[in-house]
Image (cartoon, rainbow, N blue to C red; front, top):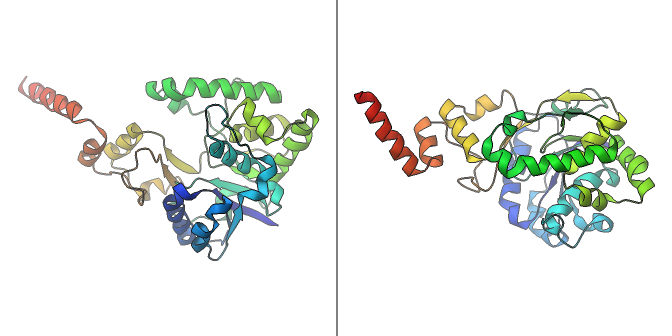
Length: 301
């Protein structure tokens, strides 16, 4: 069993993203960490060219006993199943700890064991309150309020009493020790499987994080997010206006994720770093025109 590995759950529709992610993995993987790619059985041939050194493909059928076939929380079965696989992956006995990577992730600098692990056996735990997202009116309206209700529900179910919501949106390092405790001490007494957890609240990483905070199954060595995630175009615009480039982000993060709903090109994980380019890409022309007219009036006054 490996001490640390990287888990990528993907499927045919995201192959271009996965291919890009794997390329960046091999480019920057300085400690030869293993990568496990889990795909639907019918997608094995499509993904097989990605197998190189330290890369292994596993099939969804290995998790068949846990998977769902009907939508849940208006989320398609495939979405729920990728959450289940991230929670159940430890049962394959391949690695004691694993960093969960999205297909959209691009590694942007050299990374290794010490980026994910506090010591030889203890992973970092990514825990944040995300107050920077809470204060954004659009994000608060569209995502935060519903998410907060679900997270409070998970806290109550596991018996965690904390006014804070310390968890993460994605890209945690998950411990088999913690997940085994979740299964044996919380799920099994209730006769629950992973699908039952997600039927209560569809946030797999918060089930992990809140159970860890409740159980203290391992020492909590808190870490800020390892990956810079761009949730919406406003954040892309902010980066562009500041002139932040990939090498700047690499000082604080091992990787970058840009929401696929507004990536300019499926084959690229890039963003505008010139203020004018950022404005052109992410601000509607009517807003730009209005701003220009106001600028002219201000200059004349």
